[in-house]
Image (cartoon, rainbow, N blue to C red; front, side, top):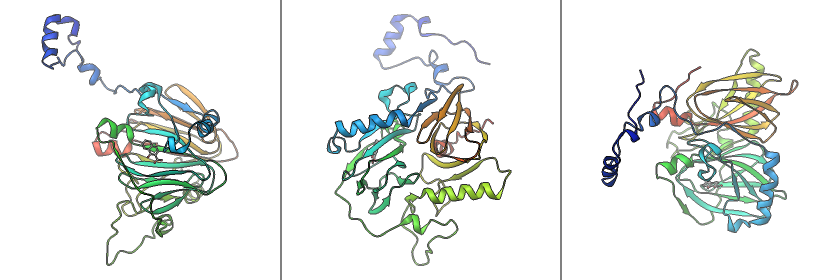
Length: 346
Ligand code: 1HN
């Protein structure tokens, strides 16, 4: 039973002021707003960012702002429900589209927020993560987890664009967000994507356990796509054809706060995702997808990105009848599970 509670206006003004002067506030006028019944208040609005409209503006940023003046040349995908200046896609998720032009270099730094990048366009760029060179190709996922040095370089001939996903809003909210600049990294031999590319085959550790908290830093799209295609092929009745990006040593989420997945929709398939507590981000890698999110319908083409608030179901439809569609998904599941608040409401 939810009772009407007393309002601030019900109290004598002088009393409220006396409290305020002592840095005191009565709880009951605000109790329902901080702890609403049944469903949390969500500022995250279902929002679509179309690549076709965003891309020319990102290229324009390439003309307007040299890389030295930007360090990271990014247009942030900001959710209007949170206020654009907050630079949030959801409560915990930051999204940005980053442009690196041929010959440019985005200098080395490390920071507390965890990041990944999903490569959208172009060849020849790479991220160096703790000395390991991770080449960028369309659909690849590259991790830059908390505390790891990272910088971007570009030896190719065309612009390279990628989607950055970070847990920056959370880190900022808990007053734990900061960075340290570093020197240009010395690239050492290392191809973690090759060492761990085949699930079930991992390096033996007889004499020494791996000291790496993050053994795999690059997840090639060709491997994720093959896994999805064979899942669909092996079981024609399988409804949700999805892979999780995991740490190959532990089998747990690739990073601590946000979860990363790739999903295949069969030709013409409609898939209803249950209402679960974490907010989600959907990014089209290949194909055309309709996303129905909180009463909104988004028609998404390749490289389009949308987000959905938590506690809402999402219905995805492959708009092609003859080709599969592939989506990259990021969500707040690892965070919700660690907090003990993860829910699936069906
Ligand atoms: C960052 O380090 C990168 O390394 C991109 O490419 C976007 C947004 C906020 C804070 C750090 C990068 C970022 C970022």
